Length: 410
Image (cartoon, rainbow, N blue to C red; front, side):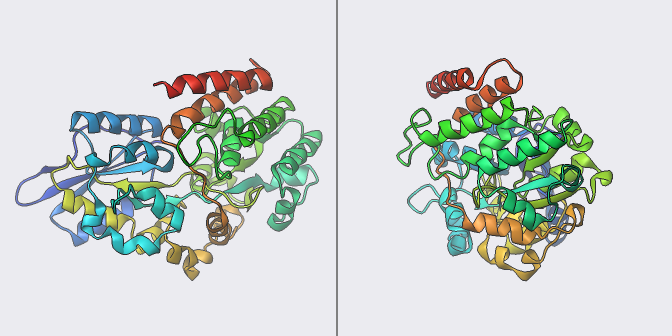
């Protein structure tokens, strides 16, 4: 995800007169600004400040802050891929069960609740969003290639990822000056996020070098790159943003939160050019986060109350219907007629509520190992070498395995 700014400084502190300041640290725009304004109105003794940094930087800083015992914000977002790592340091976090979190147990999608807990009734975070998967596509480019443009017909083009890549080859045959997808890394991530077991098995043992799905998906993605289907853009970079604006690719893997990034990158002139269809392979999730409360803060109780407010049913509904479009992880909110009926005008009035909720509700959750996030990086980097024509898929695979093995020793 993208970052807008980054500020330093410790968590909370008294500002005199019984007033307190709480900080909320995230790694992208979570859509909290209007909610924070609302919270400050109903809690006149509380001032809330946001600090936003890039994904990896945010989580690396949190590791340092937890180790040193200072510097963490009062409320800290943790992305799902990093959650297994931080669950191992649960003693550094407040147990939100002490602040009423257990009342929400049955309110969450079951896998979301499981990801937030760390055994013995310890609730480490309140679930924010889930990243129900879809495919965003450029209607104008599909029309140019003679492909159907209606989202239901488009979904029929790719029941499987093999079908998706074959459609891409047909597209490139008709529209050779545009790529089929933005980035091999993003495609590979979406495919891996549909597997029940990916880089680690449920005992947390590394299986990236023996799970046939990993090699199957890597080879399929690398092969698609070698056929010229990728725009070879580094995800979430300035070049990637520019590529979206310039329409360099016809499709993008599209978790719910991606719709906000596309709108931001493509700008007003992109309105109506994009639409959304179901993802190949059926269902899937990419991303989603949790709000945690580090113990080191001076106002843990107040921070827990703020985290609960920012993830309440009303808040999650408002965020989904706002510019960021982040999909709720509370089951009743997903079923809410207002959410189910949500359409995004920018994407040709695509029924995003139905599309993303169906995807998030039908998936088989993908197990994430303790070192899952660090192991994924070498595979993405290796596919980048194929995109840069610095390695073929077979050589890139060997590099990925070697680098992944090395990363496990750190």
